[in-house]
Length: 354
Ligand code: NAD
Image (cartoon, rainbow, N blue to C red; front, side, top):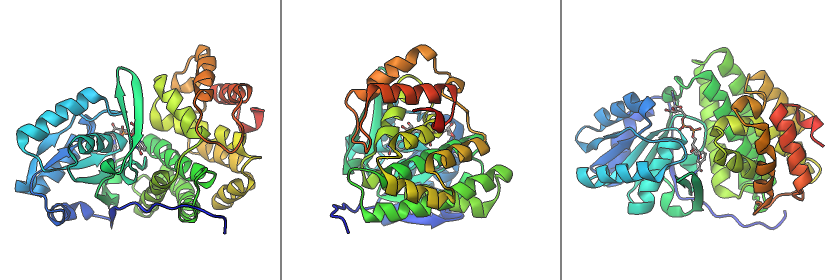
C-alpha cells in the first residue's frame, strides 16, 4: 500500500425513497426548531412542500438561490435568516441551493440539512465557491459542510433528461479526478470505481425512461459517492479548466460534460492506473474515448462552441488555465492546454487533441 493521508468528513447521510418525510425528525435531532428553507426560483414548489412538512419548525422559504452563489443573493437570504429568527437552514435542490446554505453557514455557523435533487455533489463537500462582481472565490472549510444529507430518490424524478446527464457527468468528473489526485486515498478510490460503474448505466437507463426509479436510485447513490470523493481529495486539470470556463460564462454542468474526455486524454499517459480503473468501471478499453462515447450516446452538447463559447476566447482560457494550475499528473504546458481547448471547442473528440 502506498502511503496516504485521509481526513474523514463528519456528515450524516440518510438515503432512500420518500425520505423527505423524515425531515422534521432530522431537524429535531440537530436540536433545531426554526429552519429557513432554501431553493432556486424553479424549485419553490418543492421547498414549500418541505416547509409544510416542517410545520411550526419552518421559518419560511427563501427561493432566490442562483448558480455560483452570488454574494448579493446571500446578503438577501441573511436578512431573512435574521428577520425570521432562523436557527438552521434546509437547502432543497442542486448545487445552487446548497451553495446558498453553505454561504449562510459560513457567516453564521447555523446547522444545515441538504436535500439534493441533482447529481452535482456539493452537499458532500467542505467547499464553497462564491461570486462577487464576476469573480469566483473558492474556499475549503469544515464550517460549510452540511451536518445532514437527506437523499430522496423521489425528488430526482423530475430532473429533466438534459440536466440529468450533464449533472451525472459532472459527478463522474469528481470520481475520475479523485483517482489521480495528488492526495488520492484508498477510501476515495474504492468509491470512485463503484460510482462510475453505477452512474454510466444509470444515466443510459434514465434517458430511456426518466421515471426509472432503480436507475434514479443508482444515479443518486453514485452522485453521493462522487461528491464524497470531491470532498476527500483535491481536484486537477479538469476542474481547473471548468472553473476557468465557468468564469467566462459557460454553464457549470454542461461544461463538465464536454470537457471530461479531453482532460482525461491529456492525463492518460501520466496516470495509467487511474485510467485502467476508469475504463474497467465503464466496461471499455480506453477511459477517454469511453467517456466521450458515453457523453455522445447520452446526447450531451457536442462542443464548447455549442455551449456558446467564442473561438476568440480559446487563447485567454488557455492563459488562465496555465496560470496558477492545480496539481496534475501530466505537466501543464500552454501548447498542450491550447490544443486540448481547441479540440473541445470544435468537438473533435479526445483522440484528436495531441
Ligand atoms: P443548479 O442547482 O443550478 O440546478 C440547475 C437547475 O435545475 C435549477 O434551475 C434547478 O432549480 C433545477 N433543478 C434541480 N433539481 C431539479 C429536479 N429534481 N427537478 C427539476 N428541476 C431541478 O445546478 P447544479 O448543477 O446542481 O449545481 C451547480 C452549482 O453548484 C454551481 O454553482 C457549482 O459551482 C456548484 N457546485 C459546487 C460544488 C461544491 O463542492 N462546492 C460541487 C458541485 C457543484
